[in-house]
Each structure stands twice: as C-alpha cells, then as structure tokens.
Length: 69
Image (cartoon, rainbow, N blue to C red; front, side):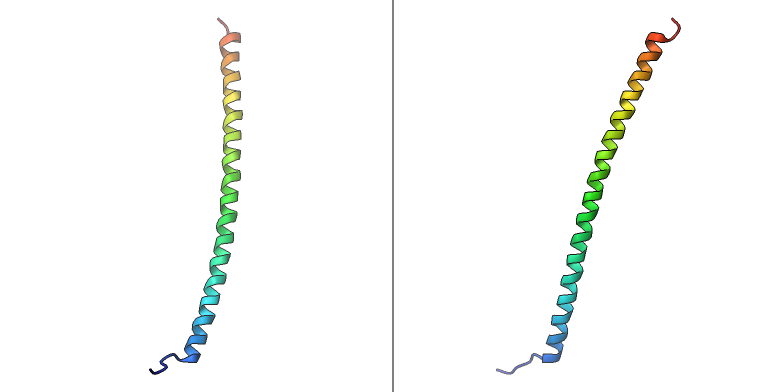
C-alpha cells in the first residue's frame, strides 16, 4: 500500500479548513446580529402601527362628534 498523501498539500488543506471555519463562525455571528436587528424593527413597526391607529381613531371620533352637524 503506497502513501499517496503529500504532507505539504495536506497541511495546506488543514489551513484552508481552519480559514473556512473562522469565516463560517463570523457569518453565524453576523446572521445573529441581523436577526436581532430585524426583531427590534418588527417591535418598532407594531408600536408605530398602534400609535397611528389610536391617533386615527381619536381624529375620527372628534370629527364625528364635534364636527358641525
């Protein structure tokens, strides 16, 4: 059985795998940060919708009840 594995090429592959592992780790952190940001934005959107709906309701009530009949 012959040894066809070149130690230099094998060492280069190990280095490439380590680099790829680091990049994947960085990507995971970036995705987690983006998800957190999206969740914050979603909460702000619903808060804004609630405030706008309340304001619209008040304006409608005022226009209906205090508008010149």
